[in-house]
Length: 390
Image 1 (cartoon, one colour):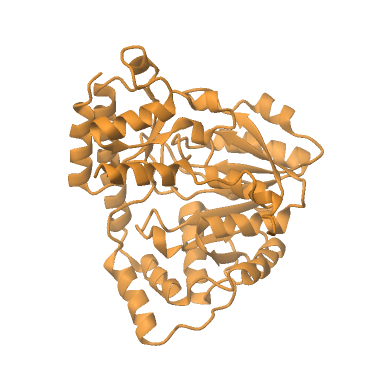
Image 2 (cartoon, rainbow, N blue to C red; image 1 turned 60 degrees about the vertical axis):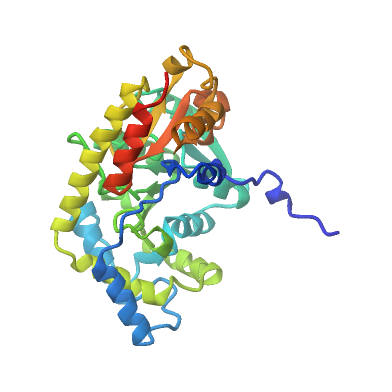
């Protein structure tokens, strides 16, 4: 029989999918997969329904409908402090993943190296590999998640062409400070590198931290592809709606790549997303307040049984260390066993920490939990965790 391509040899089902299947067997609560189970705003749903009813069902321009690009450009200007031309510097994508794929294919050549900070978001790594690019890993300081810029500069080689920056971070909730971004920008300029910034959780920041876009800094726009998604902000993960902003010449090429791979983002859903930008400001205020309260509640539950962690600065995950628990009882010898123990004894699913590191040992005492749940489900999850025998 014909053989699969070499690029698929190391391709495996992610831990996230496997954990989801296991917790379903125990009729448990899935705090592993980063799926927000809250409803999408009615205005967005009605916008898509109206588009379907009015037969707005043909291909759109490969970079998205112009009214949506204009709304997105205004959002970038007001929230991210990035001035951009909606006709040439903004593209609507098939989620942030679609934006990342287009950015890689437009900016990189086979064999190019890309710096990635770990713990990392697994899709970035797997996509880089399957597309023919080489990720080079730079560990953040354990538990504090500070950037070692000396190690970062040493990792740059003649083959390095880009850096991936995820802020707020998944899984660790790190929010890059303006000072860190400026220091990173200095390296980008010194070595003439691209930056791909994943800013999916930009509206979810805590404890006085502020989301800053690298592209908003002086000298940042011309070498940055800013990637975001509306999945998390508007509870529409299955809609696959995202956007990118960047220099016109590269966004043009990304649009042509988008045309080859996706043709265009789903047209009726673009009209639905357009309604998001007409929502009252209170929506984002309520979103912020809700996640702040859920974060505090869930941190208290984890700490009550001995998990240790740095409070996440952003996003809606807690990357928790269970090394002290492992000293007290069996079933927590490593991240895989701890994940299974939580499912079987507390009916709670998490993601093994090794999923987020190139060296599995760095994640052997970590689990990632997602607290983006409806309140009654989160309440139950917290009680189940508190009942865990430690």
